[in-house]
Length: 228
Image (cartoon, rainbow, N blue to C red; front, top):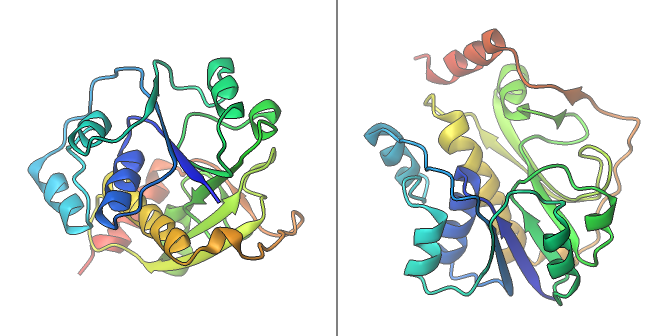
C-alpha cells in the first residue's frame, strides 16, 4: 500500500508534514500546491503554543521540505481539481492521498485512481460541514476528528477512524488547535494501519450539516475554552 499527501501553504499542512517527520513516517509521494503566497504573521504567543503541540507554525512548507531533503512535486496553483494535478495523480502509483485543502473534490479527481482521505474537525454524521470544532465545543465541551474516504458529497464518505479531544484551554483554535487535533488523528491512522481495515459506511440521512459559525457563537465557544 502506497500513501501520499497533497500539501498547501497553510497551517494544517505544516502540522501534518512536521508531525509525519517527527514520527519518522515517510510517505511515497509528496505533492505541494504552492501559489507563492506571503506567509501569515504569527505572534510569539501563537508560535509557542504551536510548539507545545508538536509543530512550528512559523516554519513554511518549503522550508520543512528543503531542510529535510524531501523529494516532492510542486505546482504553482492551489486548485485540487486542476487538470495538470489530475493528470499527474493519474500517473502516480499511490493508493491513498492525504488531503489538506485546495477546494471541494469533483468527480474527475475522485475517479483519478487513488482514494482521498480527509481529516474532518467533527464527529460525523453528527457534525458535517464547516467550523464543526466550534459547534462541538458549544454542544459537547469537546472537539472531535473523523478520518474518512472522500466522495462527491459533503462529509459523507466511509469512516476510517474517529477521535475525541478535550476542548483547548486557550484561544488559538483556528491557528493551532484545529491543526493539532487533525494531525494527531492522521498519525494514529497511519501508525495503526487503519487504512487497510474495514471502513464504516455512513447513513447519509442521519446527522447535521453546519455552516460557518456566526462570530457571536464563535466568541462564546472561545470564552468557553479560556474561562477559569
